[in-house]
Length: 389
Image (tube, rainbow, N blue to C red; front, top):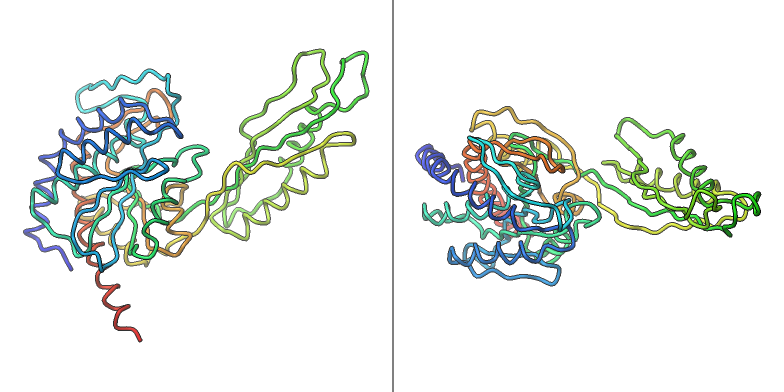
């Protein structure tokens, strides 16, 4: 199904009329704290917003909120994912402020506005009485940030795995198309030793010294530029006092690549470093904290092309990128998926985060078009599959 010009004009007009409503929703959502692992209050708010609009939201065991639009149970569904969690601790002061065309607040762009846009999109489709070719399942999901390990996206995809035609993730910057999934492995590396007094027991091995040797060896590893493969030691801890030989030290290691074999090779290299470099008398251990799958959808993929056309339609130049998002899960399973944003902003993951309100108009419009055309794509693919012997 190609959306006709009159329908496109209606989408633009409807999106324009809903900008302030989406901004107001984003404010309410943002001011409800939702640290990764503690998203319940925000999930309940989103569920109430959906119920106010006539939907019957469901919440699963991990805290995802689901709303289904349509009544075609025999066809695959088009899933929308917008994560509810933020990087900010529960005690972070959150007071969204409006300054002209700018909204400021921790998490306002990542990802409160996306969640609000998803709720707003359902309302626009209802207002315009537009029926999609397949049902839409909108999911406000948990666990995208930090060590959430994409557990919300995993649960949603698993729930619909046998009936999932395509996934659109709403996250990031308007105009960007994330079609590649940066996979990651996250480990806590712990070194333990006997400890002792820095003077009286001098000569006993220090866990901190052992961890330092491991970190230094990791820093010397050579990794490919293409496919881009990276490592980082982002957190270190250990020791008890300046005059104590440390009995324990730990570091959190992040390893990433879009290429699974490259990530596997790096993982094995780091494992060997941990096992070899701590030093005599010290015990290194590895605890797996998280693993995000990798993969990519080619730019020629039909869903990726629909995203390109929708962004071009609102007058923007599509920017292709690879990243780590909820799209990692479906992409790694071979399910058509893209990630797109609905506005522009700056200083994400800081308390100074802000977004621009006017671009929400174009973000909503491109998302509406993409959903209509993606649902038609899923329906065509289902029809083709049914005819294949």
